[in-house]
Every structure is written in C-alpha cells, then in structure tokens.
Image (cartoon, rainbow, N blue to C red):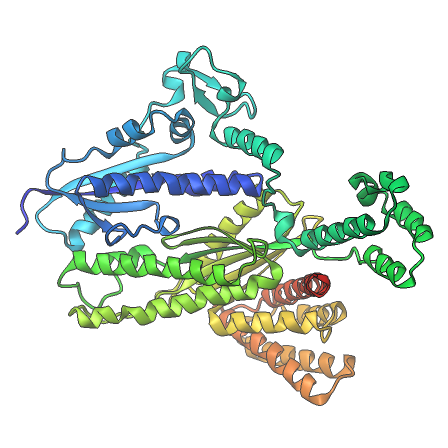
Length: 574
C-alpha cells in the first residue's frame, strides 16, 4: 500500500471560447501560443518540484509543447508539497499582461484528494470532484478578479474591453494595452523595422501567393526594361493599382517582340483564382472514457501504468502529425497547424492540401491503434473498440470573420459527435461545411473512412468537369419527390432514387462507358452508405445526400481554380 499520497488534477478551462474570439489569424496564433505557454509553465513547475507526473506522460526533458493537453494529473506525497497556484503567481508576476489574461478570460481549476494507491476508482472520483467544482463555478483563480479591486485596474486603451493591472503611475501608452493588443503593438513595430510578413487567411488561400508572385515578376520585368527617364513607373502603387496604364506605356517602349509577349502574359493572368481556405478541427472520440478504462473488458492490474502508457501514445500521436505535416509544408503557406495538443487538433490549410491533412490524421490514428499492442504485453485486458477521430471541416472565403469560422467549426464538431453517437460503434464522423463569399452555408455529414474517401472521389469528379451544377439540380428535383414517405416504403423509394441517379447519368453525359461506370459506382456507393444511416433512423431524408452533392460541387470548382493557380506559379518560378 502507498500511504499518505495525494492525487491532483489541474485543468485550464474556457480554452475554446478564448481561442474562438480571435478575429485575425495572427491573433489566433498568439492565443494558441499563450495556452501552450501556460501549460509549459504548469508542467515545468510539477516536474521541478519532484512530483510524479502521470498525464501527460513525459520522459526526461523531452517536452513537446504543442502536444500538451489542457489538463494534467500528478501525484505528491502530501497535500502541501506543491502549491501550483502560488508558484504560477511567483513565476508570472513580472508579466502583468499574462496575469491579467488569466484573470479575465481563463479559468484554472484544481481538484485534489488523498489516495492509498492510484486505481481506476480513484481516477473516477478525482474527475467527479473536478466536475463538481466546475459545475459550482468555484474556480481557484491564481489572481483576484478585476471587479474585486476596481481601484487598481484600468481597461485596455485599444480594445476597451479587456483589463490590465495598473502597477505604475508612470506607464507609457503601450503599457496600457492588454496581452493581445500588446502583441499587436509589438508585431506592428517589428513589421516596420524588419518588414516581417504576418500570416493571414488570404496567404493560405492560393490566390494571395499567385497575386504576390505575379506582382513580383511584373516589378522585376519593369526593373529590367525601363529607362532612367521613366523611373516614375516603378512606384509600386503605379504597378499594382494602375497596371493597365503602365503596361500600355511599357509596350510602346519595348522593341523586342518576345519581351512584349512575356509582359502581356503577366498582365493577362486570370483573376478567377480561389480565395477560400480550409479549417480542420478534429478531436479523438471519447478520450475520457479511454483514460478511465471504460473500453476494457476488465480493469487493468496496474491502472497508473495503463494511463501513463496511453498518455505517452497520445503524445507520440500528436508529435507524429506535426512531423508529417512539416514534411509536406512549404514555408507555412499551404499548411498552418495552430495547435495539436493531446486529443485536440486545429489546422489551417490550402484547399488543395485538405485531403492530405485528413489522410495524415487518419493514418496516425491507425498507427495509434496499432501501438496499443502494449495492452497484451503488460497483462492488460483486450479492447472492445478502436480509437477514432471526429472531424469538422469548414471551407471559408477569406473575408468571412475568422471568429465566425472558428465558432462554426467547434459547433459542427459537437453536432457530428451527437449525430453518430452509438453504444454499438465509435463515432468516427466528419462534417463538411462550405461558406461562400456571400455567407451562404452548406453542410453535409459522413461517417467512417470509406464514406470520407467516397466524398473526395466525388469532389474530384466535379473538379474534372465530369459532373456539373446541372447534374446536382436534376438529382435534387428527382429525390425531393421521395422525401415524405412512410417508413415501410423507405426501401422502395431508395431503389427509385438509385434508378433516377442512373437515368440522369446515362442521359445527360456524353462520355466513355468506362468513365460512366466509374462515376455511377462512386455516386451510388455514397448514396447507399448514407441510406444505411437513413434506414436506421426509420425516416427517408435525402437532404444530407443533396447537401453532399452541393458541397462537393463547390469544393471541386474551387479546388480546380486553386490547382490551376498553383500550377501557374510553379511553372513560372525561375
């Protein structure tokens, strides 16, 4: 028996609302880095104190900060051995901006209990205690709330909504900024001095780097050909805002026909390029139940060892995703991981890289399940299920407010988890939402790897021009006729729907028979899988299938624009 021990859990709450308040991509990165910084401090304090860190399981000094969850569990010999709140106050006291952010927007909640040995029951009791504290909102803040000491606080001069501490009457203007606004101020100064380009959603969308590439080539062309008496043409404003006038003037100055053709090609570059980007938000299904041992046939013989091993596998899973994405990425233009911590994943990417990002996540989930062989080796019982990941994808125009996109991604992730909740199977769902520049939203759902692969096969058919908007309209008109039917006619109406899809394919497209058969197989495979879900609900609702067609059409058209633009840039790169 292990006498006189205490088990503690620290949870950093309100993380998702804190992150989804971001209005710009650079602010999102700053907020994400701030969460990472706080968890870094907490883990470092625990490790330096000599306390035994159970979750996350970190060997030696190998701390992968991006893969840290926002909840840690550790063990001490007595309750007063480590006061995490007091230690955080001591370490962060010099940084008034961070202290005030913890006060105003984040909750640090701590629950502790004495134990004789760390067992499955003690873990459940600890989580119940933490849940009770959070439900009563009896949070243990590491600093006082602003409204409890109004004489010593002032509001941020920039946003006028967040608070900072007034520790010195001689503060200059920038000292009256909250954490986020202070970061904006610092970044602005850095940009002026060092010409640092900040990431934005338009940089992730392919159109920005196509426009950027064209502008650089035009300026280079003018620098190579213009004479001294025409230096006024080199001003960037003239080139970017008055490009047609400058081009006509340059044409009259250039004698070489080959150079004229090159200039004409640069100015004729199409403006119809994609300005959409993808947000991927993923979450391991029921990780809390996995940590509690819910999916074991019987309880493990050594519960602490089981949790440490599982935590270690989850950390390795997050790190491997980061490494795989880094290999594919090109200067953070195509793929931008915001955070990959524990079971939470948030990634921004170009729409051409979306399939690769999803495949990377799924491949690492499969690898994670394969690594569960440690269960057998350590005399643990067999698993009933496998780990799965639910994913929310939002394709958004770069002008849509970022905070709206982030909130939608989070809301839709919760929706897809509820949609595919079942006692007999894991969730493993995907929700796909497309937002146009006019803010029209179209959402579809699918479940399982095979259905997700069929979704992207369908996108490719629209991208290649084999399917069109006209096809979506005709199928929609036919299937809507079969919506309001009784449950005993579902099978018959499903067959009628298949016949309608076949008829439209064969009569509306003049293509080779082999290609037609391939299109038919992909469409009907997706239709049948979604029908299986419809049948389980005892009602015929073709809306999701029609929304799937609409989303795939929009995505296919945008991806075609993006692919053409990227190909153009790579072809003309020197």
